[in-house]
Length: 117
Image (cartoon, rainbow, N blue to C red; front, side):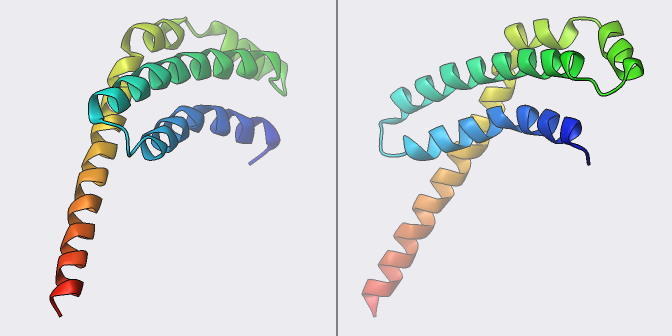
């Protein structure tokens, strides 16, 4: 994979990383506050990373053919990230909350069984 594709992939994955890191770093906060912060920051991350992705894809396209292809795309992803980016955030947040819930239950179970002996 060349540098152009690598940077596009990093930009694409950055919102997921931000949401996961933020969820884990705020794990000791009460859940309404944690979810609100993760929701707002995650939505902003998705919106801005989508804008960066398409700007980078056009501005740094390695060939004119790729540049023309990117320019021919409509603005659907840009607009969609603004109006529907929250759906992705909610999905990732639900996954993270499920992981956190299972991890807490597993830790309690392990602690309970280790202290019983």
